[in-house]
Figure (cartoon, one colour):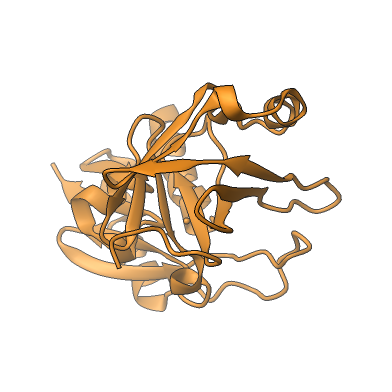
Length: 210
């Protein structure tokens, strides 16, 4: 019973969840993590040597906005910890971006930028600003569920629209889910990108009958 509750809880949380071959200057990249250790964030390359890191605003919480030096060689972007000031290192630690303090290597991969060490993928924010959704794959059938998106103040200013077809599908297989007759795998960020492609980086929940 406890396992069943965990499965249904995972589905509910995911359902309600809220991401040229060179980096482009003055465009915002959305950094989507694949785990619960790191935090989603934004990067904006100001010029050929400075990148701005910005944390995602949370309601009633301070926001980090910091400029870091970077270099590029053979298609790889490097943010070296030795070139970061002590004050910036302190702020990075305080806001939970510890991995930036040890140095970052980001590879170009088409439209996406990949930090494979920390399992972070960077995509154009504008590409997902209006189409932010989680994909459900249930026995090979695809459903797109809109996610909640917070505004610049960290507030959700509109309600999420429930995918009725997805809701009906989950209702039809409810007994099978309760009897643990499905394998459930959740992909997010770089994992979703490598398996399903650029447009599914916000997350894929795959359900396959055992």
